[in-house]
Length: 168
Image (cartoon, rainbow, N blue to C red; front, side, top):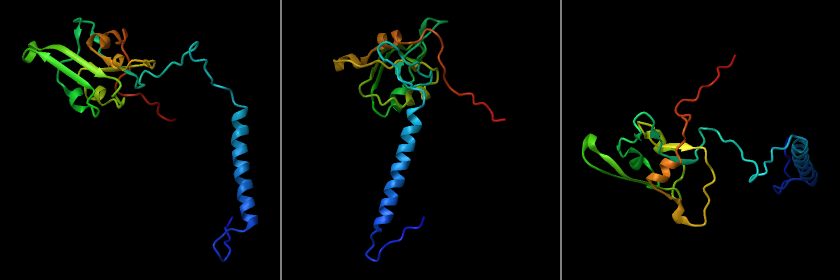
């Protein structure tokens, strides 16, 4: 439909009414379509939604089950790549005798970008599908080494490449 402008640059009254009616029709069509679809509401405290294993939730440091030690090799890559500077790592010792003494994450500063998870060469820092982290005290959002170990999943989680089905 072509818009015919009056010489002063305004639309005619008929065109304005037509555009208003067309917009009303489109809005009501979308409303009526969704009105009869199946509802997906969840009663949150009683029911919880399962999130994808690749979802960016809280961070954790899993323990290597074979050696019962940290997977972290203390390369400081996650600390360097973090745009929010919310990861703080300290270690004692030299070379292979190095021990992790501090691994803190300030979750109130974290933007959940996932760069720390991607850059880690040993998958020592992972996202866990946990989304209930609200608190009344901001100090509770500072996760230390013990908190990060406690939050780590007991079973392996999905990492790396997502398998995509090829179209037929």
